[in-house]
Amino acid sequence: GILGLIGCWKLGGAVARPRAGFIACLLLISIPNYYGQMFNNPKDIPFAVGVVWSTYYMIRIVPTLPRPPLGTLAKLGFAIGMTMGVRIGGLLLLFYLSLLLALDGTWRAVFANRIQLLASTAWVSLWRILLPVVGIAYPAMLLFWPWAQTDPIENPLRALAFFSHQSFPFYTLFDGQFVPANDLPWTYLPTYIALALPELVLVLLVCIPVAAVVALWRGNFRLSREQALASFVLGVGIVFPVAYAIVIKAVLFDGMRHFIFILPLIAVAAAVAADRGLDWLSRFPYRRLVWGVLAIYGCAHISIMAMLHPDQYVYYNAFVGGVEGAQHKFKLDYWANSYAEAVQGLEDYLRAEYSADFEEREFTVAVCGPPISAGYYFPPNFRFVRDRAHADFFIAFTKDNCERSLPGRTVYRVERMGALLSLVLDRRELAAEQRATKRASAAPPSRPIPGSPRTLNLPPSP
Image 1 (cartoon, one colour):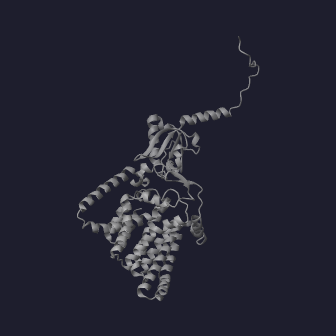
Image 2 (cartoon, one colour; image 1 turned 60 degrees about the vertical axis):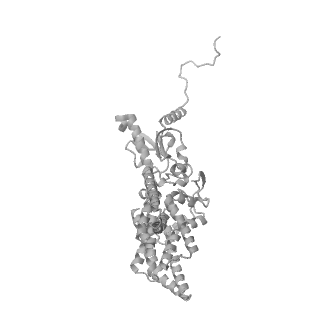
Image 3 (cartoon, rainbow, N blue to C red; image 1 turned 120 degrees about the vertical axis):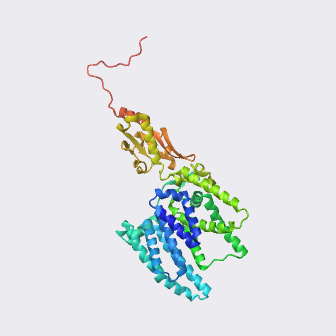
C-alpha cells in the first residue's frame, strides 16, 4: 500500500508537476477504500500498486518515443510482469502500451503529413519497445506466479479464460436489493465507485470535463504531445476497465473491490485538476473563504476516517448518507474485518460473567463466513465449530443478512457511525434445548419392568 502511495506521487508529478504528485498522494491516502484495504487485502492492493507503477513508467517513456532508454523499458517490463503475477488481468497494461504507441505513431504521421511514417514508427515501436517489454514482463510474471511455472503457456491462458467467463451463481447487494452477480445492471460498478470516493475527489473529477469544454469553447485548449499522450494513458486506465466490465457484463460482487486498481489513477486525475484549480484560486478574490471551507471539509473527512478505524474501507460518502445511509443498501464489511473486535467483545463478556473461572471453561463458537477472520483472534478456550445450530455463540457480519440467519441473544455489536458491521449472539440456552431434544428423540422407548403390574387405561372412579 505504501508503495502505491509513492507510485501515485511519482505518477502525478510525471503527468503534471511535483505539486500535483504531492496532492495525488494526499488524495489517495484520503480515499478510505484504499487506505482501509492496505491492511487486509493481499490481492487487490498489490495489483493496484503494480498498475500505478506500470502507468508511471509508460508515461516516463513518452518524451523519448519511439526510442526510449532500455533502462526505463526494463523497469516498465518488470512492473507489468509483477502485476500480471498478481492477477492475469495485468495483460491490460500491454494493451494500454500498444494504444499509446499507436497514438504516438499516428500523431507523428499526421503532424508530419507523411502517412508512411506511421508504418515505420509502428515497426520501430514493435521491435524496440513492445517486444522487449513483453520479453521482460513474461519471465517476471512467472517468477511471482508459481502455478504458471508448472505450465508457462497453458496455465496463464487457462487463468485468463477462467476469469473472463467465471460463473458465480449467487446474489449480491445493490441499492437495497439482491441482484444476480452474473446479471448486474450496468449502473452497479459506476455507482459503487462513485459512492466510495470522498466528495472532494468526485467534485474534482467532475471539474475535468467541465474545464475541458470551457477551454474548447474559449479556444485556449492547448496540450503538448507529451501532455496529450500522458492524459490519454491516464484516462484509458480509468475509463476502459470500467467500460469493458459493463460491456461484457462481468461477474462482480463485493462492490468495487476488484477495481481498487483504478483508485490511484483517479487520485492522480483529481490531483491534476486540483493543481490547476490552485493556480486559479490564487487569483480569486475570495480565496480565503475557499481555503476555510476546504480546511473544514478536510478536518471532517479525517474525523470520519478516525471514527471508522480500523474499518475505513466500509466508507460511503454523503451522497448516500454515509455509512449509516448505505446500511442494507450496499455492502459494508464484506471482509469481516470487524471480527477482531467482535471476538474481543465476546471474550470480555465471558470474563465478566465467569471471572477467574473463564480460562477453565471451553466455549464453542460458530462463525459466518471465513472462520479464520475470527478464529485468528480466538483465545485458547474458544473452539470453532461448523454446526451453527449447536454452538454456544455465533459471530456474524451483515453480509447477505447473515446476522439474521439464527436466533439468539445479542451480547456484543460492532458498529461504526450508526451502521452495524457484525454482532455476537449468545445461543447457549437454545443450543442446550436442542441438545436435550435430540437426546430425548434418540432415547429408546421405555419398557415395562418384568413382574410389575400393567398400567390399564381405566375410566376414572365416580
